[in-house]
Image (cartoon, rainbow, N blue to C red):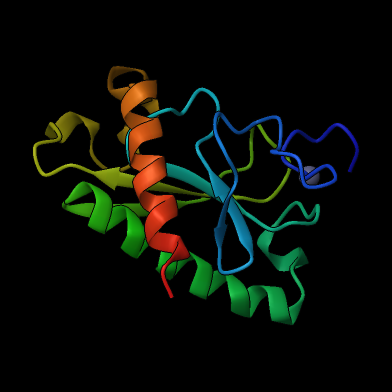
Amino acid sequence: MSGCGLCPDGGATPAELAGPALDADGWLAGVLRGYEVPGWFAVFPPRHVESVDALSDGEADELGGALRRLTAAVRSATSCEKVYAVSFGERLPHFHVLIMAVPADLPAELRGAALIGGKDRLNDPAAACDVAQQVAERLRRP
Ligand SMILES: [Zn+2]
């Protein structure tokens, strides 16, 4: 879909990503603009679909592996306590799952659904970029 902002355009980094596009078992992953929190990534299919039920059977099978591999890389790079995986699709129509590292010392009022609303308190673009480089390195390993 032209102008989507998450659709890859001839191999270029999608416009909604703040850094390089990472390869998570064939799915694209990266730090979303405005969600530059260390250990937070969006993972999305390389073609435009708007909901999980629009995926092909093969893509649905691939999604599980991509989420597992990316989550393991995030956990390894951040030593976080938990990793959330959520999908809303209110702001960006291209189906994506947001992977969110949850540090052990995160205040109770920012846990669960409140975490997405508290993102500005956790925003740290330089640290998010550093974690993204570590995650990219882990994803390149066989
Ligand atoms: Zn798209």
